[in-house]
Length: 154
Image (cartoon, rainbow, N blue to C red; front, side, top):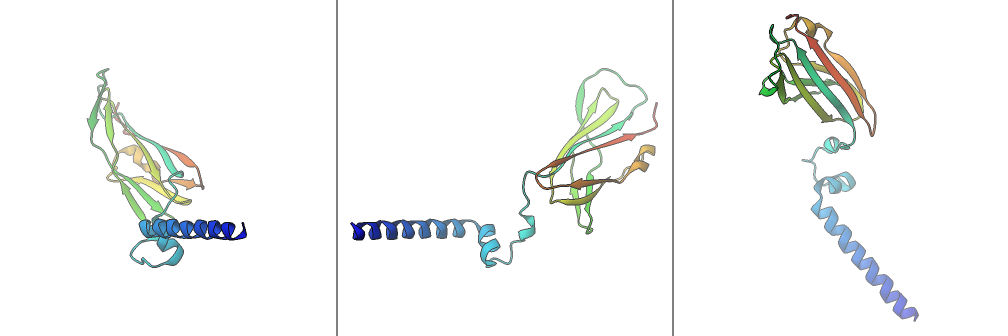
């Protein structure tokens, strides 16, 4: 009986070691995090996908005449995210023109916890003076952020 338990335990241990070795070999980022044997992988990029910023950018009015025409794909500025240590991330936004009157672009960006500055690229409207805005990302939460730009066109 004791021999059978010993063999069973050793079989379990061997199987566990093989499975762990495979998992480490298959996951370079996990291997790097544990053993630092893959220096080409930046471990700072392993950000939780459950935190960052979420919200939208609205630019209105972009035309002096608004009409109920529905929505259409459009172009607009990119979202510029600057971390407190100066790292810059440019996010291309998917813009929609609503009723020939306002540009709207939703966003959700995964970020590490910290303080960030949000700005728009090439924003020359009168309302762009409110930029940049500051957001604080806390662990495990998507921080809401809304950027509303008034163009001055009426």
